[in-house]
Length: 101
Image (cartoon, rainbow, N blue to C red; front, side, top):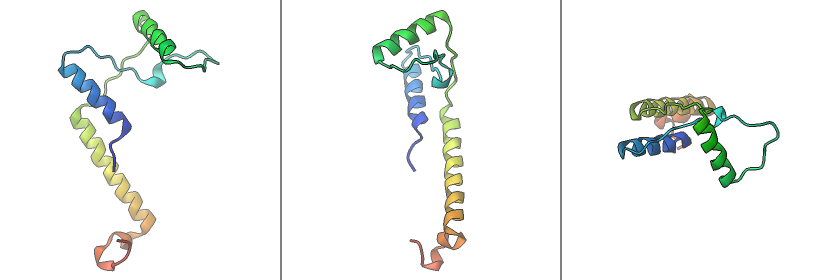
Protein backbone atom coordinates (compact mmCIF):
# COMPACT_ATOMS: atom_id res chain seq x y z
CA UNK A 1 0.00 0.00 0.00
CA UNK A 2 1.44 3.40 -0.99
CA UNK A 3 1.62 6.45 1.17
CA UNK A 4 -1.48 8.61 1.19
CA UNK A 5 -1.07 11.82 -0.91
CA UNK A 6 -1.69 14.09 2.09
CA UNK A 7 1.12 12.58 4.13
CA UNK A 8 3.73 13.96 1.69
CA UNK A 9 2.42 17.45 2.40
CA UNK A 10 2.51 16.78 6.13
CA UNK A 11 6.12 15.64 5.89
CA UNK A 12 7.03 18.80 3.95
CA UNK A 13 5.35 20.96 6.58
CA UNK A 14 7.16 19.17 9.42
CA UNK A 15 10.51 19.49 7.61
CA UNK A 16 9.99 23.21 7.01
CA UNK A 17 9.03 23.81 10.64
CA UNK A 18 12.11 21.83 11.80
CA UNK A 19 14.26 24.12 9.62
CA UNK A 20 12.55 27.09 11.30
CA UNK A 21 10.84 28.14 8.07
CA UNK A 22 7.45 29.78 8.65
CA UNK A 23 4.86 27.55 7.01
CA UNK A 24 1.09 28.01 6.91
CA UNK A 25 -1.02 25.09 5.72
CA UNK A 26 -4.33 25.96 4.08
CA UNK A 27 -6.89 23.34 3.09
CA UNK A 28 -7.79 23.77 -0.58
CA UNK A 29 -11.46 23.25 0.26
CA UNK A 30 -11.36 26.31 2.57
CA UNK A 31 -10.00 28.73 -0.06
CA UNK A 32 -12.76 31.12 -1.13
CA UNK A 33 -13.52 30.92 -4.86
CA UNK A 34 -15.74 33.22 -6.89
CA UNK A 35 -18.46 31.48 -8.92
CA UNK A 36 -17.38 30.90 -12.51
CA UNK A 37 -13.68 31.51 -11.77
CA UNK A 38 -12.17 28.55 -13.59
CA UNK A 39 -9.10 29.86 -15.38
CA UNK A 40 -6.12 28.77 -13.35
CA UNK A 41 -2.53 29.87 -13.73
CA UNK A 42 0.22 29.50 -11.17
CA UNK A 43 1.03 33.20 -11.21
CA UNK A 44 -2.60 34.25 -10.79
CA UNK A 45 -3.20 31.65 -8.06
CA UNK A 46 -0.07 32.69 -6.16
CA UNK A 47 -1.01 36.36 -6.30
CA UNK A 48 -4.58 35.63 -5.20
CA UNK A 49 -3.43 33.41 -2.30
CA UNK A 50 -0.89 36.02 -1.15
CA UNK A 51 -3.56 38.74 -1.13
CA UNK A 52 -6.03 36.52 0.75
CA UNK A 53 -3.38 35.51 3.29
CA UNK A 54 -2.45 39.16 3.90
CA UNK A 55 -6.15 40.03 4.32
CA UNK A 56 -6.66 37.16 6.79
CA UNK A 57 -9.22 35.49 4.52
CA UNK A 58 -7.60 32.03 4.68
CA UNK A 59 -8.11 29.45 7.40
CA UNK A 60 -5.01 27.62 8.62
CA UNK A 61 -5.36 23.91 9.33
CA UNK A 62 -3.19 21.71 11.53
CA UNK A 63 -1.67 18.80 9.63
CA UNK A 64 -1.44 15.51 11.54
CA UNK A 65 1.63 14.76 13.62
CA UNK A 66 3.89 11.86 12.66
CA UNK A 67 2.22 9.75 15.36
CA UNK A 68 -1.29 10.58 14.11
CA UNK A 69 -0.17 9.76 10.58
CA UNK A 70 1.12 6.34 11.74
CA UNK A 71 -2.21 5.55 13.42
CA UNK A 72 -4.06 6.49 10.22
CA UNK A 73 -1.79 4.20 8.20
CA UNK A 74 -2.55 1.27 10.52
CA UNK A 75 -6.29 1.99 10.30
CA UNK A 76 -6.14 2.14 6.49
CA UNK A 77 -4.22 -1.15 6.42
CA UNK A 78 -6.86 -2.79 8.60
CA UNK A 79 -9.67 -1.47 6.39
CA UNK A 80 -7.87 -2.77 3.29
CA UNK A 81 -7.54 -6.22 4.88
CA UNK A 82 -11.22 -6.25 5.84
CA UNK A 83 -12.24 -5.19 2.33
CA UNK A 84 -9.98 -7.84 0.83
CA UNK A 85 -11.53 -10.45 3.12
CA UNK A 86 -15.02 -9.45 1.97
CA UNK A 87 -14.05 -9.48 -1.71
CA UNK A 88 -12.15 -12.78 -1.62
CA UNK A 89 -14.03 -14.58 1.09
CA UNK A 90 -12.41 -15.78 4.30
CA UNK A 91 -10.73 -18.73 2.53
CA UNK A 92 -8.98 -16.31 0.17
CA UNK A 93 -6.72 -15.22 3.01
CA UNK A 94 -6.14 -18.70 4.41
CA UNK A 95 -2.67 -19.96 3.37
CA UNK A 96 -3.69 -23.61 4.01
CA UNK A 97 -6.41 -23.41 1.34
CA UNK A 98 -3.79 -23.33 -1.42
CA UNK A 99 -5.82 -20.79 -3.41
CA UNK A 100 -5.53 -17.09 -4.28
CA UNK A 101 -1.79 -16.84 -3.62
